[in-house]
Structures are given as structure tokens and as C-alpha cells.
Length: 171
Image (cartoon, rainbow, N blue to C red; front, side):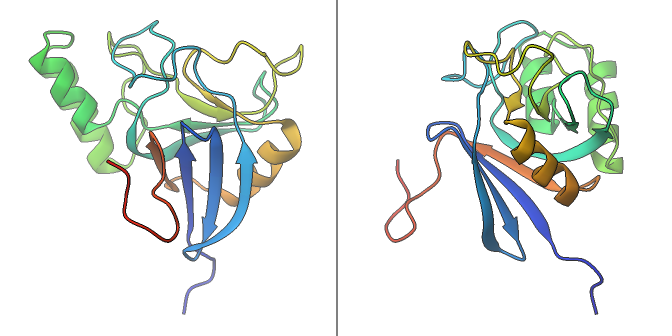
């Protein structure tokens, strides 16, 4: 018998929404702010894009300057594969990323692919209306709720848009 529920976080970039699923059912939905260049997938450090793909919570920071924060396992293996093919990272950095992902650890955060992608609360001056540098930002009340549910290893999926509840998936 399980002691705790299964939690998954789904981020819909188009809807600017983070859904919290508990045991597969929608428990909470929160509005989010994304990277200033959120329309694209993150490719390199400094592009201000929020990444697409499957990640996990790899670190939790209760003393973040952004209230509370959850580090995501960006770059993932797909990002590392793309990065090595494009000559952005070398085989050693690729291997380090792959190993970290396989071990459920924090992948290297300072490569040309970028890093330090978080789900976080508001900064010292409140919410930034212009968006983030690639992170997923919530208001502090919502962040407290998500932080309390999301343990290390919690799966996080970031998509362009989620399929409709009762119809075919969008193309």
C-alpha cells in the first residue's frame, strides 16, 4: 500500500497554466508566467525560452529569492542529444547530463544549453509582468501549494498545449 499520492505537474505553455495531478486526477490549476520568449523551445543559454519536454523536480529551495522554488531537470537527455549534434556541448558534457538524468540528480546547470530552470514564486518586487528568463512563475499562494506537493523526483511535463479533454489531440 502506498503512503503518499502520486503527484505530476503539467505545464501548458499556450494556456499559461500549471495543472497539479494527484493520482491522475486534476487537483489544482494555476496561472503561470513563462519565459519572455515562451513561444519557442529552450535551445541555448540566454534565449529566455521555457523548455518543452519531460523533466522532474531535482532540487527544492525553501529560501529562494523567488519565495520558494523547484529546480527542473533541464537539460534532459533529448536536449543533450540536440546540443551535442549542434556542437553546443561536447561528448563529456553530454555524458554528464545523461548520467545525472539516469541517476535522478541535478544535471549540469552551466552549459551552453542553459540551466537553472525553476518553478518559482514571485521575486522581491512582486510578479514581473514581462515574464521570466525561462522559468515558470506562479503567485506566492499557488507556489506554496505546489511546493508542498512536489517532492524530489516529481514528474513535470511542459507542452505547447494540452489536448482537449474530450476530443482528438491537437496537431
